[in-house]
Length: 265
Image: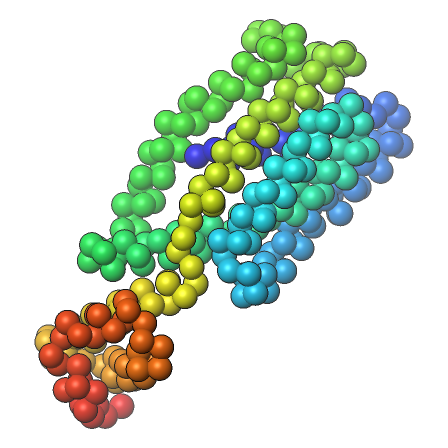
């Protein structure tokens, strides 16, 4: 919901057009934006899977959010320096590039909801997000002119003319960055409370596979992969004594029958 607010930190277009006077400087800055700056996200996409495997999704996103907050805070401090803004923007893009991890985390959460309720809610989630982002978008769209008014830019003022005034331009960069900082801090807060670890999610998937095997067995639609998964899960439960998996296995009387079932492939 607040990602749009956080993204207000990207002021590189304004900096390119209004903080550099000569055409040569604008050309070099444009080249930097189209090559180095735009590839910062690609770097995050490349290293993301390795970091997820080593640190876990929650920790990767937590570090990403904290890094983003730090970068925007620096942008607030150095809003008068166009060169530093471009350097900071690279790292903002880098930390922001890990946002793809949230898509994976949503799938994990939907698995957790399915285990607890028996319902798979992808369609509901997508419709819910569409409604929320539409409603919230009405209000977030009002935040930029509100914050810019704190810097002396009126609601009806032409922003392109205001950016040609050095004092107003500095104020615009400051308050736009400050607004983004608020959004970035709000985004980081939920990750302090996120407790769905990789291990817990793996056990949730095992529980769902147990239920699938049992349902298919009762419906006389048991598949070879159901038996294979169930055998692996039983071995895992014997080795680790995972409470979640062990308790789920104990609910059904047909587990041993399923394990002894021979299915031709």
